[in-house]
Length: 427
Image 1 (cartoon, rainbow, N blue to C red):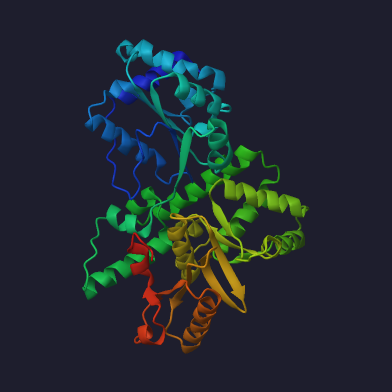
Image 2 (image 1 turned 120 degrees about the horizontal axis):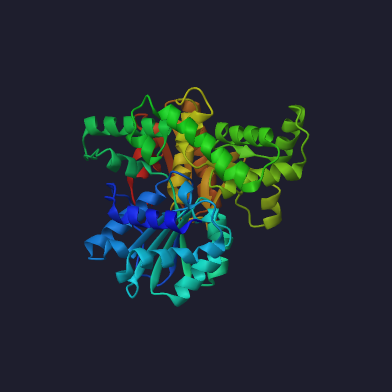
């Protein structure tokens, strides 16, 4: 890393005007005495959460010269090695000598691009008057790199694309109680959310640009966050696997069957490779795999897992028609809303299927696009009965989009999905 380039980057950030940040439900915790990490899929808004936090610091009177922001995907910082990171503070003090004995606030974006960064962060946290905040687009930031290396000196939080509630706030759409016209608007906005998703840039983009941006996202995530990061050799297999996942959100995935299917397509691949490639997608925050809720871990391991993707809009990058499979995308959106709040999520199946439940039997949720059909209502009623029988004390919800008159009397736990997605407390 060239020190002159680094000084230019540091000064440029101090001199530039901070971009406008729209409010989100999440606010970066500050002054904790810990290294704070944000982990999540690329383009989910982690950088703007940083900018919002920097704006708060400035409003509190912190000198902009004491705030360092570095994006390690900036080509001016390449190539960079862990042993060169000491240049950051040295260059800051050379450019702004008055910061030498002041508290420094350091924001490091996409830090996983610097191998060995965690040792340097731990050292400056222990030896300097500095607050460190980092982002990464790999779940290893949560489970290994930060928590293991920092040994109790860090907290790491997950960042998702916008929730439906945040989408309405971004678009400055107000929810008006007891207004039929407003309810129709909200339902229409939910359909738009299911078609195009919650990536902040997508939400604010013109509709004609959305498919192009989503295709760019899909390509970037595929190459940068999967193929390059893990040195994937069978790029064609990985591409087909990624396409399969995004075309089958809210479906059950059986690795043995998937292995056989790829074999019949002419791929020479082992079952272990399929498993390994799926783990890469999970590590990059592109997919989630729900186990079946079972008391026995052995039984749990032998059952298929339920697949959910990180954002319903990315499905459009792999299917020509973004309006297809709206029921599955609605179920994924409900999963994502719950996943923002907790990790112990499962599905359950015993002739009838429970889409989502927790491990303690405190709640369960089924999701259905329309309850207009009598056979659908019967099937969903049976599934809700299964949930109440298996978890007598659980709170159950049947979420739907298309209204059916009188459904509240027939299934008392039925609720419009948009209402559920807009509540900050789900139950």
